[in-house]
Structures are given as structure tokens and as C-alpha cells.
Image (spheres, rainbow, N blue to C red):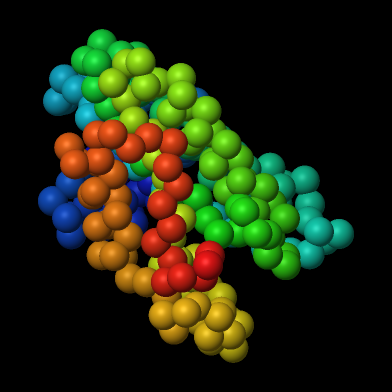
Length: 209
């Protein structure tokens, strides 16, 4: 298993925690992604599953967003999902097998104040997931997404008062934890999910009800 991250130190720490290997790369950069996939193929001879979950926040009201705020969020969320998937498709096609799992958000369907850039990026991932599922099914590749509501570094950056307000709106009364998101990813990557493609699976404590 490999973890790709722009933050080399964070990638190394996370990889050590789960027994993976870290690759320092910027998912918004095509050359970085191509190099990362080439490294995986060189070292293992194959790629079976990819999980596109890179993301950043640049939250501001619409009229305060700069071009950089807009472009960076789309380049990492949507662009990163596209670039890594595209780089792996030739290898999936050769083997006649592959699993792509993308990470979208409730905000991509319903919007959220101060997140025009983020909501647009996550909506784009939903459209990409469904389109790629149709295009890649003939090669034995499934493409699905989860829509999580988890306690991540991005959530940790939200002010406590706002975070408490958000948690109160969740029917189950809390943000999810990483293991609950991993279980959903594990299912979509498994043999048991072989007949599911183009699905957006909410793992969000009921916030999307």
C-alpha cells in the first residue's frame, strides 16, 4: 500500500502507522502523479485500488474568493481525482481489473455557505465518478465514491463553536471517525462490491437525509 501526499513528513508518519510506503507528490501536478504511479508499478508490477481523497479548504464568502482560492481547491480535489485515475487506467485495462474510490461531500449536492469552491469541486467529483464508471466498466473497473462526514484535519480547523453547530445537525449527533470511513472504502474495494459502480455512498451519520 502506498500513501501519496504533498506533505512529505505527514505522509511518512501516516505510512509508518499503517505499514505503507509514502510517496511525496502534488496531486495537482501531472508529472508528480505520473512519477508516483510509475514508482508503484516499478516496485510492485501492478495497481489494484486507488482512493482519491486529497483535499484542502480555502473557505470564504463568494465575493471574497480569489482566483487562487478557487483554482487551488479545484486543482487538488477534482483535478487530483482526475489525474490519478487517468494515470492508472492503462494498467487497469491491461489487467482487466481495477477499483477506483473517490471522496466527495454532502456539500457537493447541497452547497454550504462560504464553500463555493469546495462545493463545486465535490460536485465535480460526483459527475466524474458516474462518467468514469460508465467508461471503465467494459475493462472490469468499478468507480464509486463515498460521501463522508468525518473528524479530519480539515474539520479540526473549523472553530469549535461552528463545529458544535455542525455536529448538532447530524442525526447521529457526531462526526464520524476515520475507521468508519475506512470500512466503507474497504467494502467498495472488495470482491463483495464487484457489482456496484457509479455509486455515491453516504457515510455521514444521516446528514444527507
